[in-house]
Image (cartoon, rainbow, N blue to C red; front, top):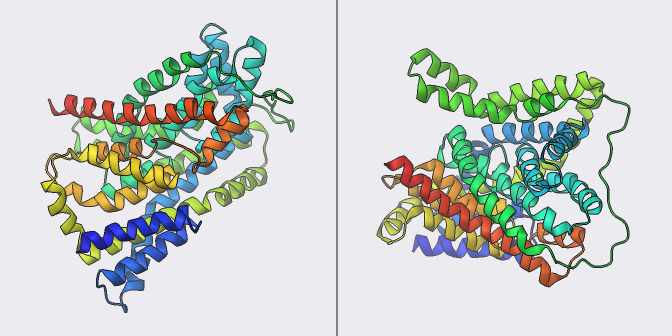
Length: 440
């Protein structure tokens, strides 16, 4: 009975977001209260349960998300993202322009939120399309596939970070596995898939958007500084995760565990970027802080949604419904990673938001960790892959792609929706390949 109540609550949550247009954060809170009452939690303790769920979820995640979005904002405002993009394009040249755009999207997409990376890099695509007389969609798909994969698979993006927290996964290993899975995924879903769109017809366009030059009189950082500063979290998490696997020295392990915690790495990265991309580039400390204030405002709602998902998770845990789910899932003849992918994909199709789909799926599948042989790092990636499935009219990114590239609804489905679905399917495929390799 408790499982049926949970399913009904999840359906109600989806309906609130999709039909009633309730803010996702409020929808999570309302659903958590109703689920708690229906599952028999005492009314007197329900508020404390919900507060604890939000507090536990946001305790570390909020810091990482805030630090990450501040780094992303400074990467854009300092001109570092522009430097990275132009340098890579100069390296690849016209012959391998799509490979250059794909690489740019992947590198820039790691520290930036998807929508920021999208808006930042679209002018680059349009400018190159104009210069080389090539279709914008043909050039854009590889780059946008990279941005999408980074958003769904890689820390420090909100969904992978929150899922890692919920499943107690090693964020460094999630990042390493995620990159291994992301590279072949974007090569196929981005680079190869875009070959089919050399003849996509664009509607009449008013004016070609060109890459904005960095102004305000500040010095642009060099390429090496831009890369090392904006991607320092990636380097830090990777190194502190791999070193203990190579050298078993207890002191080294203790140091890596301390310095390699996501909040520590992100704080160090933020301090480095404040100097290298801010003060060193000619910005005053006040200007840098103003950038951070804007960034934090932009990400506030995402943080609240993550907290709301924590409330529902806590209600499930306290009510004991998690144990019922364990018993049911063990009896299913389906691999846990595939189950996670399917559930995330279904919710994604229903509500449109990849982040919300991932968090909702994680709350239900948390008991999977009690099943032997489940790698929490790959479970995080399985949900991330499923949450990217079949972007369509209820996803704001669908409309951003359509309107920016000025193509028909039919062509948007043929390009954007199919590309996102390919990313999702290839993602879970390569997850199973990685799982097979690490278990040998």
